[in-house]
Amino acid sequence: SYGTPEAYLRELVDYWRHSFDWRAAEARLNAYPQFMSEIDGLETHFIHARSSHENARPLLLVHGWPGSVVEFLDAIPRLTQPEKFGGNAADAFHVVCPSLPGYGYSQTIQKPGMDPKRIAALHAKLMSALGYEKFVAQGGDWGAICCRFLADIAPERLTGLHLNLSLPMPPTGLEDAEKYLTEAERAFVANWPDLNWDISGYSHEQATKPQTVAYGLSDSPVALAGWITEKFHGWTDNGGDLRDAVNWDDLLTNISLYWFTGSIGSAVRLYKEFTVTMNAPLPLSPICEVPTGMARYPKEIWLQPRSWSEMEYNIVHWYEPPKGGHFAAMEQPEIFANDLLAFNRRLADHPAG
Image (cartoon, rainbow, N blue to C red):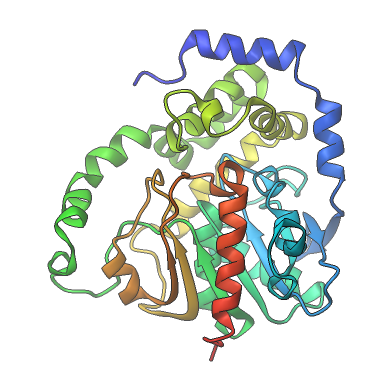
């Protein structure tokens, strides 16, 4: 409850220094085609893994904080070549996975204003540049918020929207919202302010004074590891040891990407941009008309009650996986990919307007 335990962090850092193989991690990253493209004057890094099946549906995968494109590495082959994993080739995707602005190899943001709505517009332009006028958008964490904005500003571009996070807020304008909830949902909503206070200290700091926290995290790899590891430990489906959900090599590949690119300072600024330009409630249309799939992983903390989700979204696919948490694709790549493939099949019966 006080944060990352010292003994655990010492063990992790010792492994990072003496056993972690960055060259192996580098080779794993480089197994996927990666590109830099200037979109709206901003150099954007992205993975572009095309399926061998030409008729595959384009899929935009968007990560969050403190994640990166590393989250999706084990899921991508299952999405582009499902038949190699016991699936159906007809369900395949062409995968585009960008690094958010200021994250990883994407260009550091030089001025205020790069909020989730602008990121959504940037991603729409990236997909156009790649020749994908219609596509599915998927996200968790910031990725979910950016994709929700994308569904708002360019609904005609999306054949589907898939989210594994939805903020626990009632739909805009809904009166007496709690009357629609089950007893369990009502208890969750009642407990949410206390839960949010307990887990969101990092968010308050990053949303108000990101530059202050950036100095320490950019100067000390140990501080960076402690800051990020706390979130992976608290937000994953583990039995007390993070390694039950995410192995240390995957965790350290993600942390190393932040460290080697020096991007933690620019990454956390997204919280400030969101707070300054968005605030709450989110300035979104009351109903998302894009055919939507929701995955409710059992250890995800940010969960909107189903009744509220069904009022806010055009839900055509609802899945409650048996295990997994906030970093779904990283924790459970097989479950994550199979759910997206099932959603792709469902879209054939629910074409976008």
